[in-house]
Length: 174
Image (tube, rainbow, N blue to C red; front, top):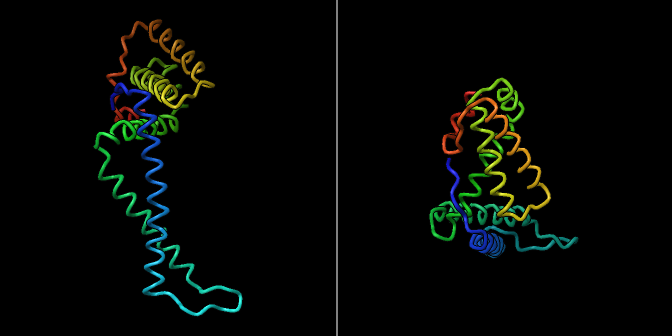
């Protein structure tokens, strides 16, 4: 995976549109599917406590609406509206994979493993990008400091490392 330039304003606008549309669609479809399921398969009598016993049908309606919304989101992931949102989502997934192995990666970097330096360079650069896009100003300075320390360590080893060298497959080598 390579880092790409993302316009912050466009990303924030598109993210808000996608989230709002998803939530609204989910709510409306859940009501529609629930009503249809109750209409065709539900109980019509009301018990003394005011229950019709159709909870399972309403729940199934929510599951169906979630399935439909997920299929629509998946089919639109390469659309102009979703391109940057999907890219950041994928980037966060890669960051999570790196984070789960971060202790081993840092240990390998202490032993001057070039792959570890490549992974860490990508990780810190991608964190900086995501934190900037998400307006996470609290921790971005810590990431910048970690990136400066990493670059100093790479320079001290006389290595040449570029984030363009990063591939997800490098995680399996450490």
